[in-house]
Length: 214
Image 1 (tube, rainbow, N blue to C red):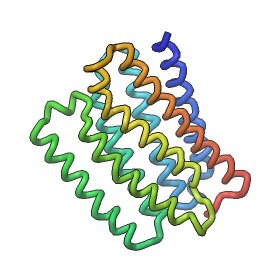
Image 2 (cartoon, rainbow, N blue to C red; image 1 turned 45 degrees about the horizontal axis):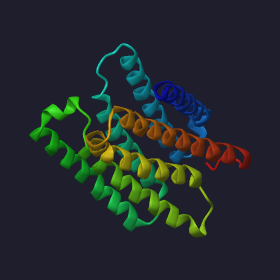
Image 3 (cartoon, rainbow, N blue to C red; image 1 turned 180 degrees about the vertical axis):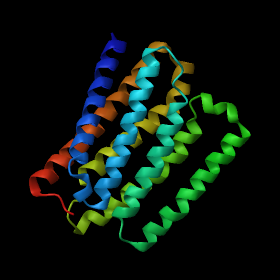
Image 4 (cartoon, rainbow, N blue to C red; image 1 turned 90 degrees about the horizontal axis):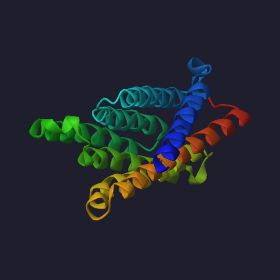
């Protein structure tokens, strides 16, 4: 039962992601740079998600795609917040964090290349933490400004906090629990992703109603 419900919610998440891609992609060349970067991020995530779904359907190993997911998420969202942030100190932190994170990941995979075909918890943590910091920077900057990509950032923080906690605790859950407990963990992660996509959709509809800033 939980497997069927998880698949349904996953498909809902894919559909919402597709809708968000369409809304972002409409007249994309006329939109401001943050929209172009965020569109590239959503489109890349959609391609990776669909490829993963096809491999899963064919009963082929799709774990290696998780590395592309987390690395591209890190790269594109880092650049997204770099474009959004106007405080030079905050932008400097992104310029330092981006190459440092990539270097640490490169060293990690050079030491343990077999992890490329497995789910890497170190990669999840080190590629997610900087994005959380950048997102918090953006929310802080919005205290006295127009709420530009406000709901998107709130949804992203909810998803990253919850998802990272679930991923990092997954091995422990499997040790002290059972496979059914592990399935619930993945289901909760899927629910968080759906919530994230709904927050993005809310932001896009709100900005569409008020007029897109270019």
